[in-house]
Image 1: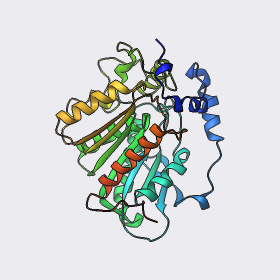
Image 2: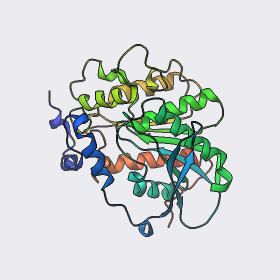
Image 3: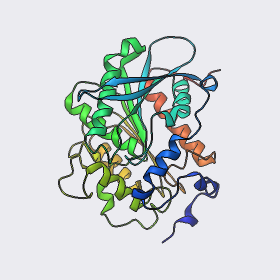
Image 4: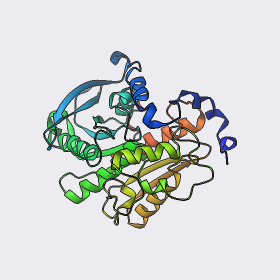
Length: 323
């Protein structure tokens, strides 16, 4: 059953901006090359400085990170560890430079974005451990970065949201790094969506059930939906969500991840975790990326407002909105 008639009319044109659909195993090299060839923004035009570094992980390899710091006064700020999306198989930290520069300036924070290794070349737990290495580096080097290590949040979109949710779990369980917030945007958190009864109106556009199965199979190194998938790979499988940081969850009503995100929000609330949930009618996966439709503007505004409140709970003003 097609859901096209349910799409917000002002989001229809943006559908043409997304990568082609088809067999992901065949298209993966082309999609990666296409994303790598995208033009990069002029740093001089951005409201934050951009610095790229390589850091060592506990496993002995290096990963790339991008540090985005608001231009202007040098002072201690809270931080957001950002994890990019891409179905666990595509994407890069630099892909979000323009968005993260705006986010850093508007939320008055340092943003560190991590280039985790991608599946299928690196299956779980490699990508998650890369994200944990970046979080540990951010926490340990906070003074040099002018970051308040007591005010670190994590977040991401799609697979990045899935990794952020898993990172919150592993950070809670290891007890080494406190987090104040997790920011989950249409998060890819449950491999069982691949084997569950199909929702009649979700997943037709942008990220389909076929692509989802490829992404999860690549991350897990086997077919999704089995009984033995670890919850650090698929956060929705975690038996206990108590003790996680306050959470923000947003998803479109036509997104394949709608029901898994709704269920995760429900379980967080039931576990006593303060949780803000937004569902956007007529919106498909990634709807706010290439569109300036009112629903996209509303989603971005809600996301930014929640991040500001989490990072600056004692402020009465709205950091980043001032001239």
